[in-house]
Image (spheres, rainbow, N blue to C red):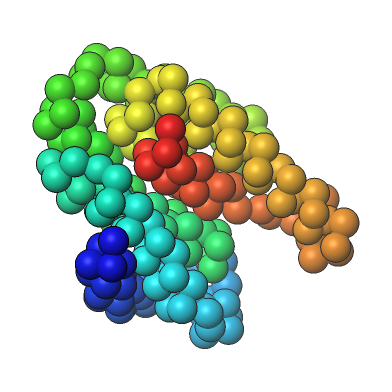
Length: 208
């Protein structure tokens, strides 16, 4: 167990530095950031939080999964945590992270012998439903959320994707209500739902 914790911490330290640098590079190249003048203040605790979260998640993966799945799940949790960070900080989910997540999901399905048809159907239907919701919500859900759900459909299939959507919607809704009650936001404020779907996906991938 000590060895797993040690290597999880080492891997997480490297991933935190590399991931944070990648995020900063994406921010520098993006002209549509929601808070371009608040990058430093909104990312002040990014590295310690990311390191602690990745250490716990990597330890779970290294101790609880078979060898062929480890690299897939380590990479998926890394990408999902980075997407959680960018959506919390700037209300943005970058294609540069979503696309590799989707490709990795397709490779995972092929490698593990899961039903390609089921997972592809989940991606198409899930993405399609969220596309409709994004259109109807007039900005409450964005294109990044649609692509995230489609990518998660490739990973999870329709049944587990439904679990993610329900967990993400409930936890995100509760967080939104709490922020309104604490007067951190009002009813007209934009709210990032992506992190709650991403964190729900990590839970389902590792625990469901």
